[in-house]
Length: 272
Picture 1 (cartoon, helix red, strand yellow):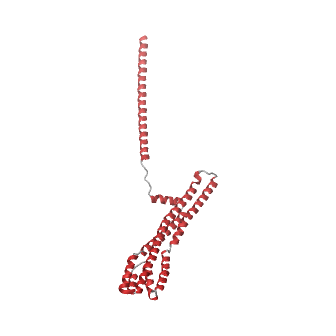
Picture 2 (cartoon, rainbow, N blue to C red):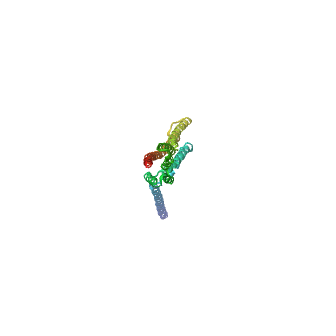
Picture 3 (cartoon, one colour):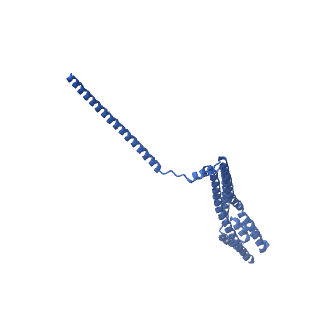
């Protein structure tokens, strides 16, 4: 009996020991699997962070100037921004037309005076008329008017040159007043958009009952954008206006100098 009890005791001890060993191995395996899973999760997180850093490090593609201009134009509102754009279009159209006209009106007056003087000496007044008719520009037109009055005396020649010179000057300055109008109109429209934008901002404040920046941001943005575009249009047209005025002054001075020289040539020819 004692041997049987001892045998069962030994079997129980061995069974208990084996079960503890299996449980320990299972726990080790579980821990290993947990550690592996944790390692995998950590690796995935690190990789995701690396990718996010690479994306953040990549510089954003900058927008072109016309894309930025289009975006700001839309944000400013098509109402007043469209009117300011029309002022720019009309002002540029008149400016380009004036520049082309003034460029065609320019002529080498020294060469023209030399040709007229040679024609008077070789073929008289009729030959000089043919020379000025074949030459473009307001200076040639003034010379033509003076030659047409040559038979009436030098006094009539001077009157014709002065009178027709005033007409030609008026033609040169035609349309310039419209450019100055658009120069003044563009910033005024911008300022009007500013006032309307501020009114919209106060309306938003009254409707929301709050004065936070988010509430007034849209109205203030409209106000500032319309003002900026109005000033830009005025600056562009002002540059063209100053160029045109300088060109006109140059042509008028050239006409006056060449007219005086032309009268002297006719006076010398009249004495012969």
